[in-house]
Structures are given as C-alpha cells and as structure tokens.
Length: 279
Ligand SMILES: [Zn+2]
Ligand SMILES: [Zn+2]
Image (cartoon, rainbow, N blue to C red; front, side):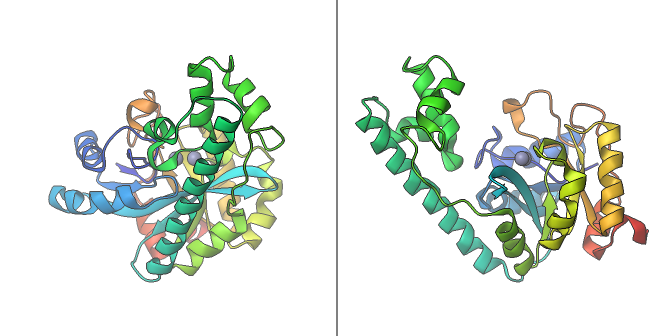
C-alpha cells in the first residue's frame, strides 16, 4: 500500500514523526509521503526512523495558499534534493511571518480586554498556530458562544481583532515548488470552494503539474472526475489518506475511510514524471 498524504504533530496530526513511521509499517504502507502544513520538520525527523524501518519515505509539504481570496491547499513533493535549500528558507520565512502575526494578534486581543496568551494558543496549534486556535480559546474562556461568533466579531478580515498576515498566492506556491524541482499537486480538489473543472486552465497555466485524484474525502465519482482532468491537462496524479492520527479518527493510513484505493504504480509514475495517458 502507498499513502502520499499524512500529517505528524509538527503540524496538526497527533502522531510524532517516529510514531507515524511505526504506524505506516504496522498498517502495511511501504511508501509514505509526509505532508505537514507549511513545514518540513516532521519529514526531517522521520528520515532516520524510516531508513531504519525500511520504509520508502517521500519528502512532502502541504502549503496553505490563497486563490481568488479563498484558501487552497497545495501539495508539494520532492523526489530529489536539488533546489531544496532556497525552498526551505522560504518555508522558514513563512513560519516566522505566521508567528509574528500571532504575536500581534495576541496584543490586539489583549487590548480588546481578553485574557489570552500566545502560550495558550500555541499549546493548541503548535507549529501551525493560527486563528482557529484563538477562536477556540475565545469560546473556551466564555468570551463568545461559538467559533463562528469568534470569527465574525474578532478574527475575520473585517472584524475588530483582525491583524494582517501575508499568505502566499496559489501561483507563488506553485512557482516555489516547481523552482525547487518539486511536483505541485492540488490537494483534495473536492474541498476547493469553486468549480475545479472551470478553474483548471488557470491552475495549469500557473504551472501546477499534478492533482490529488485519490483522497479520503473523494467518492469514486470525484476520483473519476479528477483523473479525467489529469488526462485532459497532462497532469500527474497523486493520492493519500490525509491521515491526522486521532485528530481525524475515521481516516486510516493507506485506506482512508476504508474504500480508498491508491494505485501502487502511482509513485513510479511520479518518479518518471508521467501522466496517466502515458501509461
Ligand atoms: Zn488540506
Ligand atoms: Zn492534509
């Protein structure tokens, strides 16, 4: 079995990198992609453990990008080491800008009279602490009655607690990945809040060269649709469960909700850079 989409506790998963490797071996996954949100730290820690365990580990990342003002996740896969240094520096810069925004956000919320600290938020969000964790705190402390209210009143772009953060545009994410020799794959297209088929010309134009046709959230029909788009636009195909450990209890490594079937030869095709049509 293969699985090219998984998270460790360096982003929002619950397994440590070593635990994730052990879980993959236990589940019968022999090729694993670690794709933490906006960090390579989980992958880096897993490398020696995977080598020891005889697991084929693929370097990946899931970037949070903006497309027409909406959040779109972009997977990146690195099958070689070339060009990674510059990309890693960019990722570290992005993390620094996220942390800087969080510091300013805490100051703003304190100004508004809330007893909230950065440590409390970071205890919940670790390396990817963001507005949802501040929203949780506002609810837990009884300042608002729901996450929705926390966003509407304080955290949304038009709300009184909002502080700006520079987030990469989709096209910049693609460019950074491709420049570093990576594969840029549209993550779980079913979650994109726009019609993916009609967005495709623009995404392909930006240099996106793969699509995640296989994902735990996809029905067979969704997968068919995305395989068709891959063929039409000459894209490679990726797939994975989006395993988060106990943070998403219904999702198993390699199998997703139980019906996920990721073709075994998909990784070879990624390594050859071939599209489904080139079969
Ligand atoms: Zn995602
Ligand atoms: Zn994910």
